[in-house]
Length: 609
Image (tube, rainbow, N blue to C red):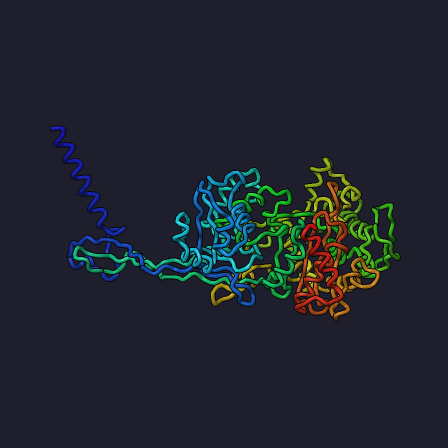
């Protein structure tokens, strides 16, 4: 009796499940189906039909439509495990010398002792594969395969181009086994990750509602149209990118160049550099292992993720804010009083703001900032503590309008906000509300608690070039046949009047002229007037860091550049030449013979020779 009851119950449950499966989600017919008024008792079956067409992933192209990344057939040669291998003969087969064979095998192994126990795959060209196929009888232990993969046509632009997660899984697994895997924030897959949905596209789906005879009675959901993967037209100039990478090479630092008129990023270098295909190439496990453990952290996306004190380049912002707050005028003079703060530049007295910028006089800007912080408004007469708090809060409010102390919204997967101190921060850090300007004066020369990213540095100088406004920096200028994301077309304004930015430009031009801190980097010989500002960032743990920001031509800016080189010394001698030559390369297409010596010397240092 109990067995019969169980059978009956199971049969009933199966019947209910079958009826449920054949019903529409709401058990109601949709458009095109018989209505209840027709007294027709019909059950409908909801189907989901996948259209056969598979979308092709979109390509990445530079600003001149050169293809940088595309999905193409990749040819792989797999070497036999634990079998003796004659590298000389293999090299003859592939057209490589034996040194190249050994190097390629070494690069493919995740660690040196893995040889023989780890499957080694080598990427081949179509011609190399043809040789293997023609001589396959003599090499029975070699196997080959081909499959579509993302193919990089250039080694340049690794942190911009990025990678797809599917192809980067071996790399990500490798990273998780290292102590620095989390530090690198390896989800930073460049535009390949940021725009993954648009690049991938999607298949088409139909949602018919069928009766028992298979006839369609409308749809139970809206059909999904097939969407091909969209091409991305990047803002990068790949030739300029490759040139800038040669200048920085193996040094630690970054270079960001953008068009101040549009916010389009022309070059984006995070150094030390590495080839763009390395994170996903099946024969680069050994190279990836070296990158993950390298002391210079080449996998760190420096322009977006590393925030540093900007040094003297921040004097531009302090001067603009002081002008806005009427703490100074362009004609304000201050003595070079080294009892306040040291000044490494030997110069004449700075009798104007232009001269203060030209000589980058630290005591001058110490006094500029003091005039901002220690000013006591009439409404707070006698209350200097409240005045300092109010003035610092106002200074920070103006500085934040440059896009600082917050993310700019650049189309990279991760971006650091940087930092600007608040009055409350100093209350906690100094353990008193009665802190004085003397305890925070390092803000006047862009040091102390101020931290900016490379993207913010480049955007800052673009704002000066534009006299107070900017478009958010971005890496993609066109999606398919359309433009960039809408937010990159929205002009943003600072809280500083344009006249105050105009007052900065003569001083920046003077920086590049005789007697200025970067006069050796002038482009006057080729008719280009550069507006610039150097910075040397004190570093208690080693050599100072070198910084430079600038734009050109000064009267009609077409390129703005920010350079930061860690432990490189003076901004005038290390960072400024790099920034200026990138400007010249972009504006003229080549470097004047006069600066070829610089170019060779810089590239020599970049190679670590």
